Image (cartoon, rainbow, N blue to C red):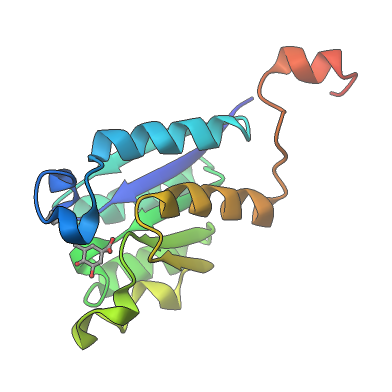
Length: 163
Ligand code: CA2
């Protein structure tokens, strides 16, 4: 059965590619979704890709990911990064591996962006690689959960003589 990775995006990331391209690049969130699906497919994973401007909705999705036994979560908490005890508490409660991902290098930006609450619960952090960071986060999650490439379908696994 396919495992699922949740890729969750916080406030204003729906604007990606349409505003401030000098900071966030020209790729849209739909482009990021395509990139993530292609990367995750290589590990035999399906993707729940979502964006919300509402903190509580992100908390609900983190709990949903655990209830559905997701393999892990790639999370760009955006503007909630340095404020959200609620998202941190959800991460700590569910015990799923969370890869905190930022498009920009938050440490090279204003000091108020540096001290992430989310990092206190995340298993790893990716930042500064542009939207390619999402694909790196998927690859990192695969490495830490022992997923292998090539196991894309039951048919190919069966052909290789595996269960
Ligand atoms: O670098 C990142 O991915 C951030 O999480 C982006 C957040 C920012 O608050 C964090 O410090 C770093 C901002 C997301 C807003 O997204 C926009 C995208 C395009 C245009 C305007 C906003």
